[in-house]
Amino acid sequence: MKAITVEPRKPGTVRFEDVPDPDAREGSVLVEAIAAAVCGTDVEIAEGKYGWAPPGKTRLVLGHESLGRVIDPGPRSSLKKGDLVTGIVRRPDPVPCPNCAVGEWDMCRNGLYTERGIKEIHGFMSERWRIEPEYAIKIDPSLGILGVLLEPTTVIAKALEQILAVGQRAFWEPKTVLVTGAGPIGLLAAAVARLPRLEVHVLDRIETGLKPDLVRALGATYHSGRVLDIGFEPDVIVECTGVGSVIADSIQKVGAGGVVCLTGVGAGGIAMGAVADVAAAAVLKNNVVVGSVNANKRHWYKANDRLARLDRTWLSRLITRYEKPENFTQALERKPDDIKVVIQFSEI
Ligand SMILES: [Zn+2]
Image (cartoon, rainbow, N blue to C red; front, side, top):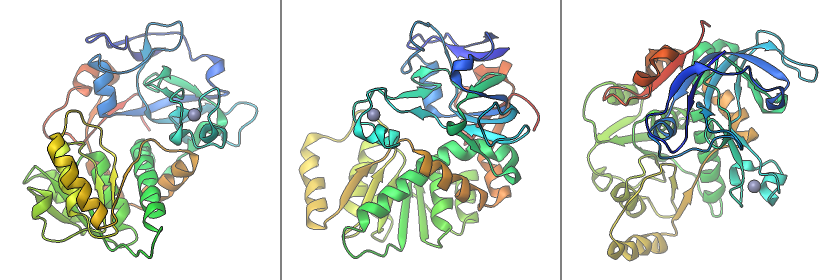
């Protein structure tokens, strides 16, 4: 079979090449790939900045946002041939730490977890892949190809759960949400936050085009410019840019008793002199800044439910390009109008 592979930490090593069929040790469920979506992490791995091959190997099969069709459910799963599935990305560390021991691998304490397509386990950008039944998530069949958006939605499901858990340390009925960054995660966050009819605002640098249109189509308000200029103090800010100045502004702008959830990963940042000012704003308003990454099985379940409740036409507009696997170079390129790029391995 063919797969998109890379030698991690070596730029320019991505290939679409022949590889052995998936190893039976990767799981008893055999899946035919339909699609894999590209995210910033894949681009970083392709650029040689991140990623780990499986132990003893030099190359890693890329891809962690998957959609496939079950070819063989194997002996011990409730799945059926033809079911649409996606694969959970992270696996608990082998020690395991207390959180991994109770199934909260997203909260792993020792960093020894592994991740498909990222850290020491092959990913899903191959014509066929295997998965353990307990890590295969059956997709609502009415989603079709849009099921490939489940993995980024799990990030949102976890972030919103964290926000709610933190906010409820005191009396708290949040009404307004600001999402910073109108990429795939930000737009999905806005859409999921609209399900319980919260007042949602999205801020991005871009002024016109598809992103503002998609925000308005949700019944949400679009802002371009600075967080400090949005004209109100949100109860919740979901920060999806990872940009230091946006983070600092968010911590200062969030309303009293509010929660800023950081989901973006950036580098560099604000000048040290400003940290005390930002911290003072958080102290005086009892604000919480919480980081959130990855997702456990509960979040995959919730995300499947939330994604299935979103408008299909709106979701389909998030996928701005489909590419064939042999065109991996274009698929891994960031173009200005891209929101989500999907590599399609077979027809749905
Ligand atoms: Zn752990």
